[in-house]
Length: 100
Image: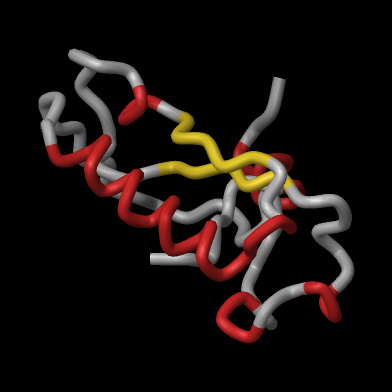
């Protein structure tokens, strides 16, 4: 079991209060994903082995935080030299897409 001190020690940004907004399913969510996925495909080209819409907004009919979660699979995400200009220097840690 984790208490606040243990959680704060293991979380990337520490323990912070947050407000979470849950919205009803919205028809724009798949459209927003497709738009961002097209941008990523254009930037990454063949480097992108996988671009998938994940998380609760990917489930039709499910209320969710209105944040489009995307996973992008590449051969070596730690190789900064392989990142095209628009992605250079972006965060790539799990849970932090680094893209708006």
